[in-house]
Image (cartoon, rainbow, N blue to C red; front, side):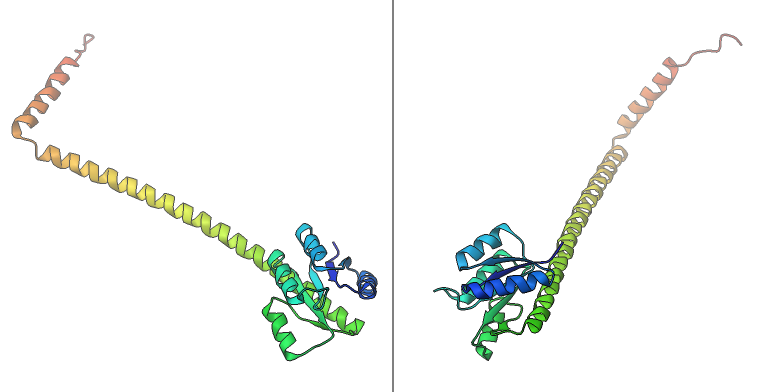
Length: 198
């Protein structure tokens, strides 16, 4: 399956350029012209990387980056800006971006950045799968340990009860022990059957 890319930009020329270039580079490319459209597409699909113009429409691009990060935590987000600065880079990372792209961009550099973003998405997905599997195994081990503890407790209680019964017999009066012995002897006599053939 080809990696899936979402391009979010209000400029038709940028959307068409990136759609054509990334498609020829082997990606499945979807575009959106504004924030609400982008969020709807994020909610209904999974994307390896999302390219977002930070000056889209009247909204704040960083708010959109944060919303995408919340809806699709595995996706690697690449904000695009024509006004690069240290503050922009810091804010992009703080809001959950993987990296950011400077406009006007060089297509070769863009391709390298997108490749790295897709690899990062796959790494996040695999890590999450491993963590979920470990959580499942830990839950199973905890359940097994709980069952074993209950079994040990049941055996311990049974042994303690047996000890109490045995202690009760040892502490019984001599008359009770003789009565029990007499019952045993009587039962033995009643159950005796002579050998008539001898």
